View (cartoon, rainbow, N blue to C red):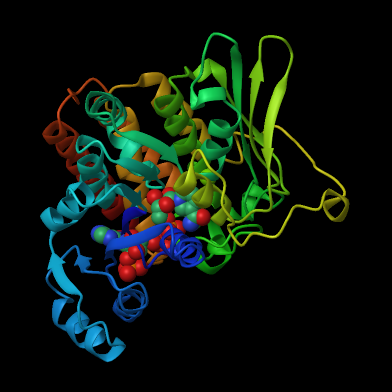
Amino acid sequence: MQVLSILGATGSIGQSTLDVVRRHPDRYRVHALSGRQQIGQLARDCAEFAVPLAVLPEAAQVDALHAALREAGATRTEILHGPQALAEVASCREVDAVMAAIVGAAGLLPSLAAARAGKRVLLANKEALVMSGDLFTRACQDNGAVVLPIDSEHNAVFQCLPMGRVDAGVTRITLTASGGPFRRRDPATLASVTPEEAVAHPNWRMGRKISVDSATMMNKGLEVIEAHYLFGVPLEGLEVVIHPQSVIHSMVSYRDGSTLAQLGNPDMRTPIAHALAYPERIDSGVAPLSLVDIARLDFEAPDLARFPCLALAFEALRQGGAAPNVLNAANEVAVEAFLARRLSFDGIARICAQTLARCDAGQPCGSIDAVLEIDRNARKVAADLLDASVS
Ligand code: NDP
Ligand code: MG
């Protein structure tokens, strides 16, 4: 029996995780679930999975959660709140594995707590790794934490690597990208894209932030940085290919001319089930792949002029140091402003580029305090740029 804490349980990845867990009551027990706004969902899940601890990032919704737990009949669930509580349920002795599925920088401290406690970390929260790559990977190595990637591309790469590690035989990692909803749209019209259009992803149902990131292809950029830290591959060994069907989730090429790919229907329950059960295989609820029904697989090179956010992520990785953290912070500020209709879609890349230009990539980033300070400063720079651009 594996005991789990699921952080970000009410989100897209969290709900897919619970769907897999629901199919295997003999294998998994849930110790803690966290959410933020979706109190009713959190309470119902606590009742269904008889969860001892429900965790909120702030005090604001505690009373509402008490009421919702009562209504859902989750009488044995205790409520914890605050950043310390999230870190506590990610690192406590009772827990074997942590699903890190909070979106954005808010997930960094609990993900890091799980790494420092030597847990099996099922990492969906790519932003945590982008912010603190070296620090995070060192914390895993020093404490024996095993990171199992949930991001479908990285999970695919992991599956294409014997032992899950890159060795001298590997020549290239190819991350596939759907190209999002604007792959064919006239770039001159991108300024008028609405949040509703941007979050309508052709192949995946995801949270709003990552859906916007997919539309700008910043998501693929963050994934390139994620792959660099997860697999220790330099930028030159990483390639992005647009593959609109999202059937090949990524590939690894070897010195002898072999390229291994992992295929499957675009459903996050596959990587989640893989990471939960690794090295075994369990049912995920995902329909078997039918290549005959899919009939064709297409590929094209990404257009960096259409997707400047992807170019910015390459640039941030090239600069190294604090640059990926700065880019992530600027992107979070810009995406939030776009979703709130305070910034145009093409403004996201502009705010990111300007923030990256104004913040020093050479700032020290070897401690968690330094990482958080870089994040705070970059957010302030991005917010000031935003205010200046809308006033
Ligand atoms: P969602 O927006 O659907 O879910 C986010 C979760 O985090 C929710 O449980 C939400 O709570 C919670 N949350 C939001 N803000 C905070 C905060 N400040 N503090 C604590 N908790 C918070 O996102 P996704 O599930 O789509 O994505 C989660 C992570 O997984 C992201 O890092 C994303 O990049 C990554 N990922 C997602 C994929 C997908 O298919 N969805 C694919 C690959 C990676 P509530 O909803 O209750 O407010
Ligand atoms: Mg992905």
